[in-house]
Length: 190
Image (tube, rainbow, N blue to C red; front, side, top):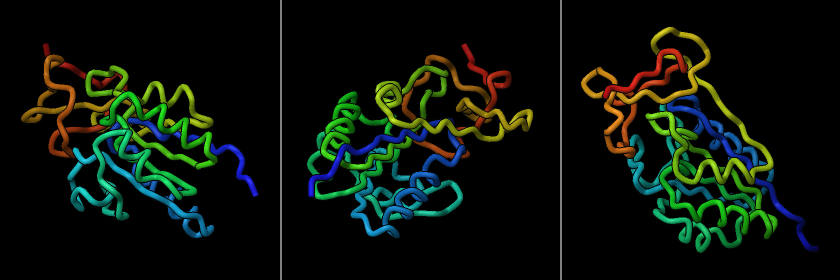
């Protein structure tokens, strides 16, 4: 029996919007359904449970293969019915092509990542992934300044103050360096 085309679902949003939690939930549902699920995360992210697990800020985790390039995902995903990739924003631009190849081979692909960096700019391969996705789930978080439910931005903080727009784009961290903010409360220092 030939399997049809797969699907691509992209889970995006700011820090603390539970992107990884949704990715783990979907992977679990597919495992319960008897599908072969392969989980990947970018090797830059070694927070919480270390480099070999996808972990949420709330403490949930699941074993995952740490990789640093989209080519590694393509090589290691063979035989999987479902591929779940976390921290997609850290990957190279080839991730969208790899996701499209997997979908073409009948694989269900879930990708989670920050859609924008701390400056509010599109982040890594996320725009290309969102453009070819069958479904995009844009999650929100609570704005940690005004407490609205419209937290769509990731605020980087250095010693409790907004980071400079000239700061490096990649700085792996959690609550010590980031918080969710709405557009009105998001700030950048000069």
